[in-house]
Amino acid sequence: MAASQQEHQQDNLEVRRGDITPEAYRQVLGRFPTGVTLVTGMDGDEPLAVVIGSFVSVSMDPPLVGFLIGADARTWPRISAGGSFCVNVLADDQADLANAFFTRDGDPWEGTGWVPALTGSPVIPSCVASIDCSVFDVMEAGDHLFVVGEVVNLRDHGTGGSPMVFLGGSYGSFGPGAGLGS
Image (cartoon, rainbow, N blue to C red; front, side, top):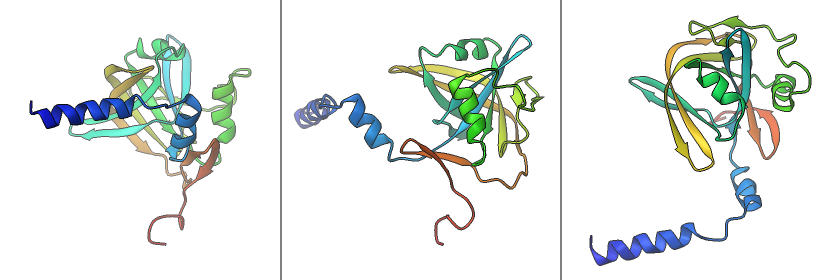
């Protein structure tokens, strides 16, 4: 490796070791909107779910999607043991549903209609869309896991709803008329 490349890598290493506090990290990354999803799965006969804001399309061939979840999350090991999960894209009017699963006060499934996907994972038809997946890979990524799923089925539920977004600590929407070029 050339000396200038080594110097550049050393400079980058020093930059990465800058004074990045958890507060600054949250503040800066809170300026970037994310979608809000409910990743569901089964543990035997028990439906499970976690609220995820880091959902991403990974590949079209093969069809892969992914999300990040805390490495110490208690629900994910129970979902992943079944080998599958379903990503339910929440609508902008489903903040109560997201909060029910996030706060875990009472049984969040009470009153939440769902049907089994091809994999058996819960699909919530009132959501904007669902992406049913088999677990393809799970990689460590710092204090999180990067979960990659191979899409086995997907559906736009035709609700006409706008997807929920999360920005700066608040839920919001991105609907018709709010897009680019308007």
